[in-house]
Image 1 (cartoon, one colour):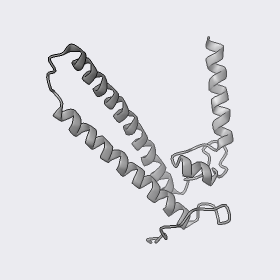
Image 2: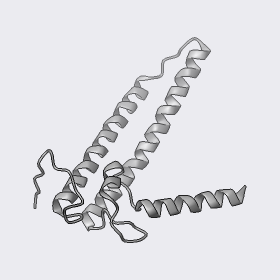
Image 3: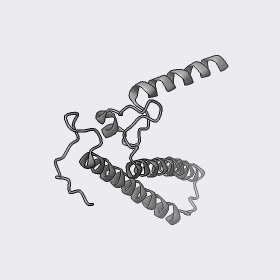
Length: 140
């Protein structure tokens, strides 16, 4: 069953949480984000493959190496993000998308709009961050 969304559709708190239109909205948002990341990744790969210039100046070579290192770290972050997007799309398909993995409560629409791969509600996320900080502080 294909759901057609109007271009101006925005999920709201007034409608049933994760109804078919809302799910489709987030599914499309995740797919667009994934496609953008893949396109950026391909551009980086093309740029890196064209590289290999041998700059005679050592400072220029160092600068180029620094740029490449930064590009590779950025691509690595994108790769991890794509994995999280794929996991979110799987939750959309299986019916768990939009619900906190810790409490089972709905994650706010505003949070999902800002971070569509969110798996925790704001409250659960804050608890996790406080626990991490406490553990870091205890270790030194």
